[in-house]
Image 1 (cartoon, rainbow, N blue to C red):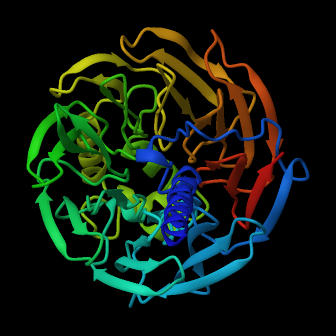
Image 2 (cartoon, one colour):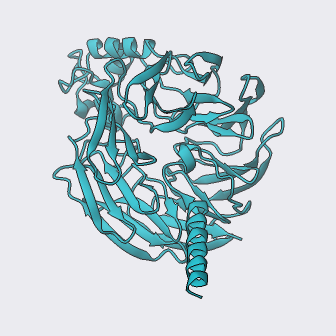
Image 3 (cartoon, rainbow, N blue to C red):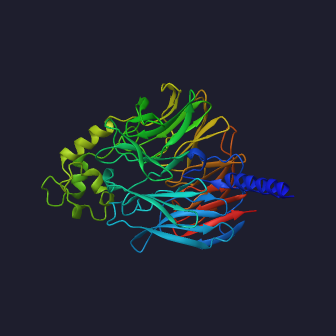
Length: 466
């Protein structure tokens, strides 16, 4: 009888672990940052009041929901404090919250950024959170602090603030530390928080994407984009294994894998169909005292007001023709592209239209999908880059920060102004299946788990399911 009980207990434990692993969206964009769930069956029709299971108010933040078993994790910015929140999947009840003890906040964009922008990552035992204002901090699923790994406050390009999230590869926590000065890739031990290695990246500029890991010729490689280059590193040692040049001057997106290849898509302003205005053009509008310099007070009420810091290349508090020339030269180095990369780090194919600024590409069922500002979707054959459709309108204009996600033959995208579109994967054009208006900002990427969709807006966390 005792042997029978022991066997039954082991079977139950094994089933519980399997359920938790299947019922998970363990980091930014879920499995390996891919945006794809092979087991989820989310509803096609959902929105406020439609297949809505629950809705709870949450503080501000741009991080995406991370799910494991019966729990949901978010980072948040509330009353000047950086917090980690844990919610119950069944009803959205707040189970616990913890504070990251940052002494000061990183600089972040007043309208486009948030100091709680990085999504958590979990293996079902530990929950790792990152704040550019503090560093890494780890808790167990009940909120007990396990370790801290403080880091120098992130100084990001243009003062936009942190945009990348920590990712997990077995017992390794990986973190993009591409900053204005001293870019690097950091790896720490998941159990202890101790640094395993840190690899300098002197030939790239600041970037805002996250890492992903793939098996390349039997070895685990970390792949991370950076301004101007896509690079791979040995997971065990941090040694660079290959590098691809010809990326945008600033990168916000995370690479994905599929069909034995890596896919990257990115766009930054100032090149091609989006030339930056010249200094003379800006001065004509804003240089009120005609001293051949533009100061912050002269930009009040203009498009340049919230982007002043990004344009002030030398950081002296005013914009001059020299700043404009330096920005133009920086932008000229980059290429806005969608590329398919082979395991030996060679570009197999390239596309240059319909490119995303913030949303990462999606590999799904043999095709690569991208969505750009304006609500235009494009699709390519993954192996060859052959065009399936390009810049097809989804009837959902506006900018896009959330990345596309997919499950059960459906692709879900969300615009920054709050319109969610569900369209069918495959086909010669994107067949829209459903659209919903949330009427508030959506910057976070949805999570797809079991038969549910978890969606964060500017003020709420939703659960949808049939």
